Length: 109
Length: 117
Image 1 (cartoon, one colour):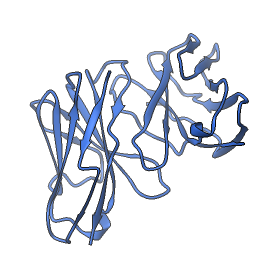
Image 2 (spheres, each protein chain N blue to C red):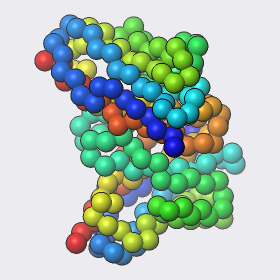
Image 3 (cartoon, one colour):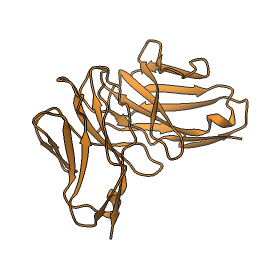
């Protein structure tokens, strides 16, 4: 499964959009991009996933570049409760999710 | 939907004893479950993959005789930490999916905090 690269940490003002980038330059054609987040001392929470088209759900939007080598997770109106570690993961046919270090998002009032 | 329940949420045990952690899919059948371990300030590390009715597949470096996994039904997988030692103290998290090759997202339990004294 392809590896991903994310910034270690980011800050965002409450009420503003949080844009979390992810690079996955070695992604192959059948691999999906998944985003999860983990709030301290809890299990990871699924946010969104996609293959090549942009996706949106009640939590977030996922923008995948045309060459699929990078993506951005957008939280449209960040709240303090969105403070968490966000993981971008590329999953292939094995079904395994291999976690990297993720991005620690701090939402500030 | 897609709720994964993990029990217990925390456990303290003495060195040398064994501890069993249960992972249940409450509203779906999970043909495949995954077990992770997470040390403080680190990311989740995949330990093993378990498929219902067959032996678990362990990741490199994970001792299969120490971390016994049983996936006896489509809704229950258990992880037993045998002869636990203080270095086994960690946050153990399970996840479940309806099919290993599926693109459906994995759903995670809320983890079990194991402390070995």
